[in-house]
Structures are given as structure tokens and as C-alpha cells.
Image: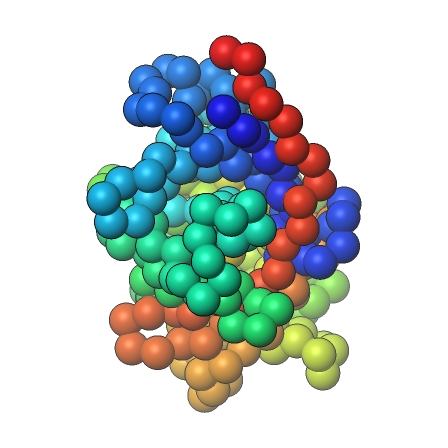
Length: 265
């Protein structure tokens, strides 16, 4: 079996968000995949298994399986085209815990069709705001199968960049993930964001495609536009192009293979 490390949402090595991609030769147990994800020690490792129609795609952090991951989906599609598993004009079709995801090549870009997940106004416990060390302008929430995700709009880009959460305490809060965001002061981008998820083993994710299932419809409504450019203000940074259309968010980016190897287990 081959395994790859791919930097997603960038065309330059050591930027964007690294993901592991493992092309399975046969079905593997959940524990085997979890152990390999822990061995890779990346925010997500994707596992691909050929099916009669498309590929079964699963994503694991070093600690748990997740139901949706943008950058590892982008990385997976990139591998299928670059390594000849699919022709360049074929769509990559993935069967996942979030349903069927379709990914296509558009010139040098990879576009993913993801579900739109609009957030709703809500309240957040004071303890959560304290460990994040923020005072948001607007508090939004999304609940899925008992898990809570928060989206906080902050006053300024500087507030987003300067936020310093206590990740140890954040892990104990009742929040699967937290996004902080603001309008961008740059003409290049519509909004900026950061993404924290210690509860699933990711203190801060460098560039989070799935976060834009929430961020894109949120800013589309506020800015009254359907095509947006987001900048994720992590240490590695990343740029995500989004298009909101009905129940879908189309997310576009690039990827580059950093290394590949052969599994011996």
C-alpha cells in the first residue's frame, strides 16, 4: 500500500494544511486506521478504498474519526489524478459519512462540492469565552448529533490574529470545534478565520476546508455575495475560494505532494 503526505490549499510545499492519504488495498479495521493516523500525527489522515462507484473515503485525526474534512478530501482527489487512479477529466466521487462528495478539476484547480451548513445565533458559556480570551460581536452555533460547533465573529482582523486560547482548558469545554472570524481589511480577501478543535486532537488546524461549509454561507449573507475568498490566519496560512449555491458550498484550492512511501504493515 502507498501512503502520501500532501499539502492542501497551496501550490507551495510547507504551506497550507498537510494531510496523509492512504490508498487501501483491502478493507481495514477502524483500529488499524486510527493507529496509522496517530502514527502520521497530522490533523487528518484520509483512507481511500475503491468501490463499484467511486471511493469510500474516511478521515481520522490522531484521536478520532471525523465526519467531514475538506483539506484531506482535496489531498485525496489530488492523489487520484496525479497517480493515475483517475483520468484528468474524470470526477472524483467519494462516499463518506457526510454523504456523496463530488470533486472535479477545473484547469489547475480542484473544486469540491460540499454541503452548506448555515449557523444560527446562540449563546456560549462564559467559561468557553474565558478560555478563548475573546468578547465576540456575534455568537453563532451549529449542532449535529449532539456535538456543538461555535462560530464567533470578532471586531477586527487583529482580534482574530491575536487570539491565544488555552488549549488544555478548551479541550474540556463542550465544543467539538470553534471558529473565530472577522471581515478582512485586505482587498484580496472577504473574511479571515481560525479554527480550533482540541476535542478531536487538533489544537489549531492550519487550513480547514470543512469550516467553510459554515463560514461561506455566513459571510455570503452578510456581504450579499455568493463568491468569496477566505484567508485562514494560522501559522502556515491558506487561501480558500468559495462559491455558495443553494444547499452546497463549492470550495476550490490547489495541492502538492510532499512525500510518498510504501507501508510495510
